[in-house]
Amino acid sequence: SQQGEEDPQALSIQEGENATMNCSYKTSINNLQWYRQNSGRGLVHLILIRSNEREKHSGRLRVTLDTSKKSSSLLITASRAADTASYFCATDRGGYQKVTFGIGTKLQVIP
Amino acid sequence: DSGVTQTPKHLITATGQRVTLRCSPRSGDLSVYWYQQSLDQGLQFLIHYYNGEERAKGNILERFSAQQFPDLHSELNLSSLELGDSALYFCASSVSWAADTQYFGPGTRLTVL
Image (cartoon, rainbow over the protein chains, first blue to last red):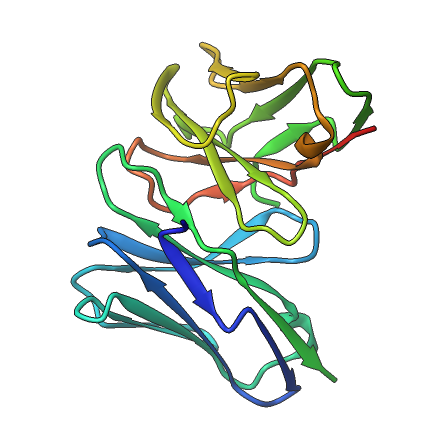
């Protein structure tokens, strides 16, 4: 099974609303990353949060990490139609361990 | 544009055939990763190369093989193709062996008929 599991699997909101996506994982990690994928395109790195960090911001993105609960959340504030995409979390256990991606949250922002 | 290039963009072939997918990493990146993404599926990690050497293997079938050349480009070879191999194949690159930020190519869409 995937190391990271996003929730919800799909989310539909109105433009201007906030979107929150969650990621849970099973084993301890070195860092956790969020990526975005527009339909059929390559993934684009959004933000990386290390295991000793609790919160990180980048523009309209806010990521939190709770290592005690093995979970992370991605908040997109004031969403735009252009934010419509799939969002993946990826966990890195460090060393030569592979980065593991979840199955993603499909976000639709309705104009 | 991530700086990672993949060729070809699309590939349509028949069952039983063999294909080669090519990836050129970003300038300066030593790691190349290959992923398979089937319809509505997450990314399945296939294999990781660092500076020409295999570093980690994921759910890669025995019919699939990869290598990274001295100029750091990489090729993924898929043989004895089956219908279920139809998918998007992505490569990604990163600076070091410790997978921090990965930069993804645009992908190769493989259709096996």
